[in-house]
Amino acid sequence: MHAPPILYSFRRCPYAMRGRMALIASGVAYEHREILLRDKPAAMLAASPKGTVPVLVLANGQVIDESIDIMRWALDQNDPEGWMTAAEPCLVADYDGAFKYHLDRYKYAVRYGEDPLMHRAAGLTMLCRLDAQLAGRDYLSGSARGFGDIAIFPFVRQFAGVDPAWFEAQAPQKLQGWLERLISSDLFERAMIRRTLWTADET
Image 1 (cartoon, rainbow, N blue to C red):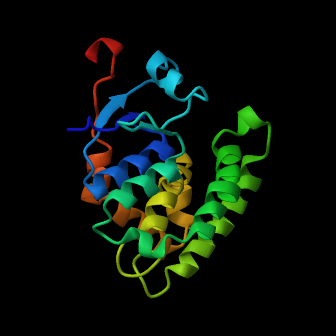
Image 2 (image 1 turned 180 degrees about the vertical axis):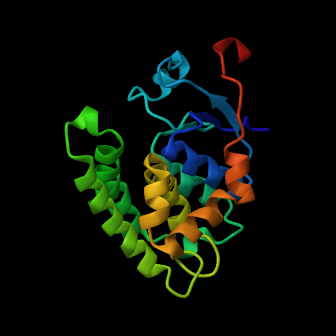
């Protein structure tokens, strides 16, 4: 019997969130290793020297260290909700790129030395585009959640968390409802279970 794949993860990282959610949705068994980004274990760095999470190490030694690729791998094994039937790669790439750019400069304005309100406005414009796509539907691709929803919403959640009162007052209502449905889902709750930190002596 093959050993399960090993996932190195950090609970609050939005990239790791979407990787975990896809693995859980697929039903693929895996070994979860919770880490601290400020104290990355040698085993993780040996597998993926770039030092970011999530990192999935397969039984054959293959390493997948991009969250979107982990999502695709998990759903290639099993896709019970049919997420891959409407994966919307262009939409996901747009929000991984431009939206994440504005999110970082809004949330971490001091680090980047930029005007947070300018980047907040640019991010809101992109959220309005998502809201338009939600017209007449609960999720981005229809009546059920799909790949695009899970890939994008952890970053929208992060954007909303910078100034929750402003977000509640200014963000489009359908978008807020979409975000709340995903945050309150059993899948997200399972993905966000608090875990003890993994140590090398557990292997």
